[in-house]
Length: 200
Image (cartoon, rainbow, N blue to C red; front, side, top):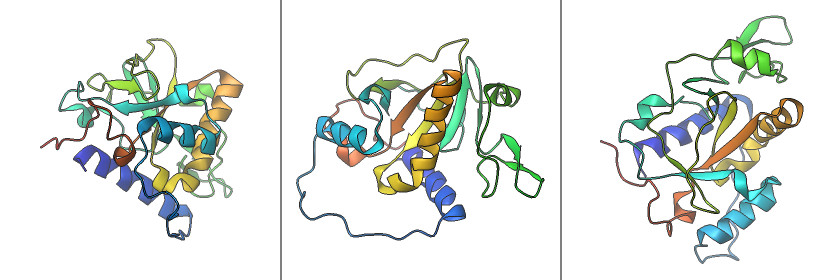
């Protein structure tokens, strides 16, 4: 597994362990055959109740330096050449203190205006090439609209649900579109141009 996916999984594990006591269960033994990307997408869409069009993978067409140009967070927000993340957006917790949005006890509700207040040009996502798992078509970030960017792995899918609910809520309330980038390489192994080589 390459450095990008290691970093992403670390982000998810840290996020989950900071708020949740994790109980690991043995995987089902009823499905030993490695599913194709199509079967995986069907299962993922059904489990998350999210349309297949929202799921993407990192293509080998990405520049080798793309990792340096994206937010190291499970959920980030991109608008043009600016971005921010749930680690950098500051909100108020139940005690009235100002804390990052991903902190336990923080007010999880957030508006479009609050996201825009924290957008900066430090991470532009320019070097990253994403493709639809369903259609294999390239994704282009819009210049003048916010997009929620979610890093996802089914290994911790249950613990990701609050964040998926957040981006769905932002879509419903403020029409902020979202994309979910899968890190489940073992399920997408049949895609020829999936990023699975070491960066360094």
